[in-house]
Length: 162
Image (tube, rainbow, N blue to C red; front, side, top):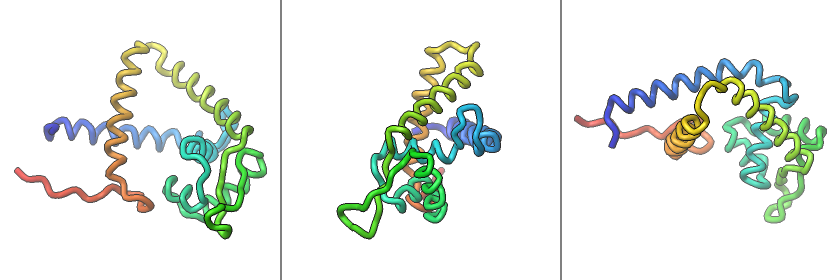
């Protein structure tokens, strides 16, 4: 079990990352250097990792209203980055999937993003950054295990004792 002091350091880090995300969002929300809006990249990334998904599941996974996903899917379809097909388990529902063009544009977006980050962190040691990234990813995954699906919040923890 970690100490209260270490927990405080984690909380401070989470707040710093949240601030970084907020600062990056205005530039990333619209087309930028890679030409791919952040919401577009987020949805394509989800489909790449999860495979075909119902629209409602995509909304839950991205923690947005289903109407938002429906509107965004139209733009993604028009760009040729996703396809829809009837769900064989329920013909009333539709599955959303990534196209080859979607995979290609996502790969180019990642390359652009990675090159930007590499340039920004160019003075740091590659192996040290890798160790921090792996550790941070493990920490985030443990914290995400506390998420309440579809509610955009973490489960309430029991009151601390002692």
